[in-house]
Image (cartoon, rainbow, N blue to C red; front, side):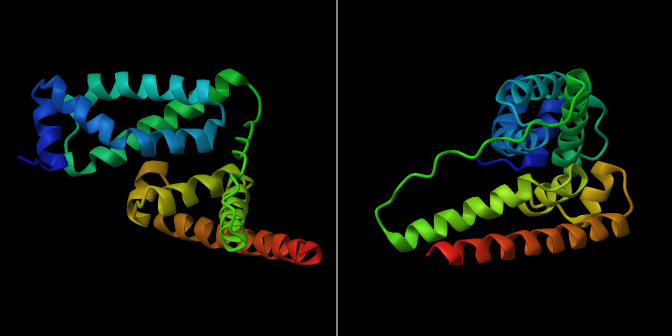
Amino acid sequence: MHQTMEQEVKRAQQGDREAFIQLFRKLEPELYRLAKSIVGRDEDCADALQETTLKAYKGIVGLRKTAYFKTWLIRILINECNQVLRMRKRTIVMAELPEQMRTGSKEEDVVNSRQLDLREAVENLDESLRLVVHLFYYQDLSIKHIASVLDLSEGAVRARLHRARGVLAKQISEIGKGRVAYE
């Protein structure tokens, strides 16, 4: 029988460890990507995820609205990532992009390189813009949820998304101009 996330949250709140583990496993890939975008290094992601898991497990009983479990979990993760950064006492080290694998098709190579260009452009955004972009586009959170998670007004979230889109458009067009010269 397939249970909804809210039902699993309720079971976890009642002390069902297996329900909590299932919830966390479902969201772990998304949480990892978000942590990676904030802290950059795999070992720091692991630390932040471990602390997030522990705090969520201990605190799930106090979660009032089960529908907001994912938002609540993301907020814990962001706080843990920020703690990791404070402990590091320096700026974020940007994650290196994986080596592009050759597919043999020129058309596929162009598509893959464009995806890498976009990913690289997102990773090069200022942290406040990058975080909003990740939450909106990669985590599929609404502006209202992002505002709640980041403790911002919805207008501030919209403004950051608008600013990020402008920066990304400029970066992508510059990359495109540079690429035309080589093709």
